[in-house]
Image (tube, rainbow, N blue to C red; front, side, top):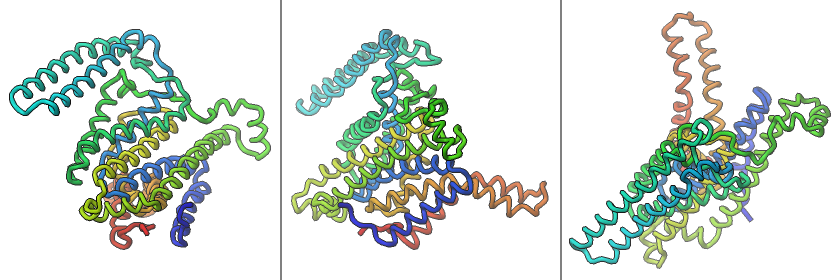
Length: 436
């Protein structure tokens, strides 16, 4: 069983819950449920980062890239295949990718099995240069043909046409695969090099998604991604739903939107609770105690016979898988993949703030930080606008000070996040719910 929450943690969760309830009463329940659903997804992202940082002290600043891979999984799994594109060059694209991978594998084998010297250098050059030109000769013509197939609506290969909920674990698999590749090369380095590697690879992932239209339409975006919940329009035409809305005295259109958001929330809550349960079980097991020992003193843990690099790789892959799953859930919630929206500010910095404010090393703290920081991220700007309107109410309409204060509303989010982070680091450096 999970550790019982102490009184302070329960009180903090109640206070955050009151923020959402107050939003429902003062604004609308549609608004509060929209914020709540994204807060659930953000909490899962924070849980994944907490596994890496709180469990093992791994500084991953490439969260954005793993979230994006989860979003890509939603397209690759749930969208229907584009038959015309596959006929035009789908198999040839796959062949090109196989040739590219084979080139890398051959280069690694040549480097590891040949003796150092001129012959190994020449062999590496022949393999890499020859493989590159062969890859481009096969890959590029096929891509051009695929992207020419109805580019306004498709221009890509599509997906597997499977139920979209399968994209959630597949998002975790894609992110875990990328994390394994990164970890095999970077986890043996210093923590600052790991940060640089994860940041750089995250940018590479976003660049590929933006520019390779055959994969997921690039910056033209993929819309109408299937949903695991009913559509509002269908509900509004369903007799039982109309009868239910009449029974509770609700407008059918408004109630359909709330009902769909509640369906999403139910699915997300199940995933979040399952992940918390598994995380708590792992954290309180001998494996968790070993990870704490490695995090606190790698030298001593290594002297006790623990394979530090292997354990770091293990927890790095697990945390990235959770982040990728959250990315797939977010794309499913939005019903669209927009690579241009993946920004480090939103999907790296903000998630790190959630973990630090909530309490790194504490799963419940990461979840609390996800809910609190996301609510603030959404609500600070409109609340800041109300505040500035109150401050400038008596000022002349042409006053330069009034204009300056009203223009500063756009920066309230960043200012608030900075102030909260400073206050927490000053008065509760271990977070609102510290690690025990």
